[in-house]
Image (cartoon, rainbow, N blue to C red; front, side):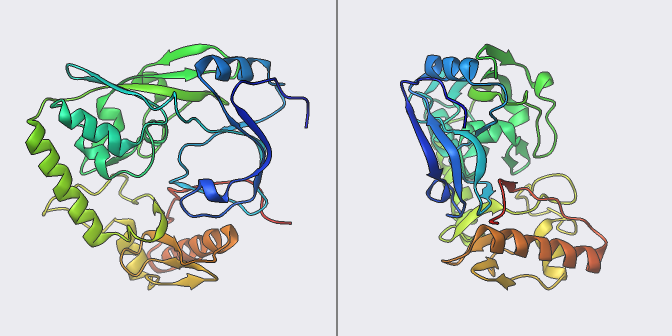
Length: 307
C-alpha cells in the first residue's frame, strides 16, 4: 500500500480483526489506525492518499468482517474519544463511549436516555444505525453529531443532515464520527435506574446474551423496533417470520440461529464469517419462500471472502 502519514497513535499493518468483533470472525485489515486524539485523526485523514479507503469501526458489535479481511485502513477510536458530559438535559458523548455507559451516566444526572442501556455497542454506531428499542430511537434525542471529514475538517451535522431512517443514516463518505450531543427528558434517577434494570432482566430472559452474537441479525419487516409493550404486535417481527419458516435453531458449520431468539445469529465456537453470512442468506431465502418477505440485514457485512 501507498506510504501512509506519520501518526502519534498506533498504526498496525495486516491487523487481524476477529478479536475486535463480537462474533469473533474476520480476516485482516490492510491497516488498523487507533488515533491518539482528534488532531491525530484530522492530520491522518487530511494527509492520507485519496485512493486509500477508510473504514470507521466501533466496538464491532454489529458487524461481520468476511474471512478475507478488509482492503482499507480501519479506524478505531479508543480512549480520548469516550468522554461523557452532562449539562442540564444535554448529554455529550464521544463516539467510542459505550451506549450502556451513556445511559447510566445520564440517569445518574436525571436525564432519560434509558433506551440506550440495552443496545450493544458505542455511540458512533448508535448514531450511524439510528439505534433504538422500546419505541425510542437515537434520532428522537440527537441534537448534533460531530465528524471529521475525509479532508480532515471538523464538521457539525444536524439530524436533518443525517437523514435518519429505520436503522440507517447518511454520513459523508469516509467521514469518522467523533461525538454526539443529545437532548433528552428529565426523570427521577432512581426510577430511571430501576427501569433500566427491568429492561436488562427482560433482555437476558429473551435474548442469548451469554452467546457470541451481534445483536439483531435482520431488520423488522414492519420497519420499526419492538416497543416492549404488552400490546406489541408480532406478525411483522423478524423473529416471527424466521420461526414461521422453520429456521429457529438452524445451523451451518459453527453458525446457528439462536434457539432462544431466532433473530440472533450466533457463533457456537468455530464459525467462520462465511458460515455466519451463509446461514443468514439461507434464512432470507427460506423466509422469502414461506412468506414472500425479503428480510434485510441489520448486521453490516464488510470485506472480502476468503479466496
